[in-house]
Image (cartoon, rainbow, N blue to C red; front, side, top):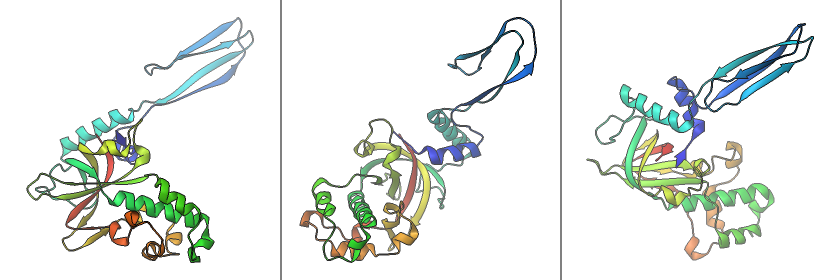
Length: 266
């Protein structure tokens, strides 16, 4: 359903679990020989085709092969979860286990898409418009594309899930993910409901503190670009329809809560 392979691969490799299959075949000329001959190399990887190299009279060749057998990402994920559970390296109960930043967790919950997702998608699209039209930043009127954006709605890229877990503390959890890693025809709405999230703790937010999502939604822009304007001022100056009014407070989630960056959702 959801699998962030860019994060999974190095994590699995760290635990000596390789991902996918790499096979390299080379051929080199060894000089003269008599007669007609052929060489057939069959790669010892299930489903791999046989490779045939033929030589005419007066030629000889040698086939060499370097292969690395690796797991399919889904198989690698299952092996990784088994390895982590066996070694006690994954937390499954946020209310009883000691949780620290960067801790790997596997959490069951009844998830829903946070309202911050739509607000963040709108902010991202607006910033993208200004990135393409820098002169519009100081203009009293937004770019023409702004009004079509208000009509059609932005495309969801970064998504935030939220849930209150059924543990002893009713722990509040946010899950951050990139919709680009959704598999097949899965859409963000398919992530809602009873799901298991495997990921890494990004932040532990104390009671009375806020977790700001603006950096998460604008992570695709350089830090230098993000510093050229204030998201709060940008939102204040936008002539939005009443039902789509977005403020900087829509991107702040109040603690206490645990913020997790998703690696897989299933």
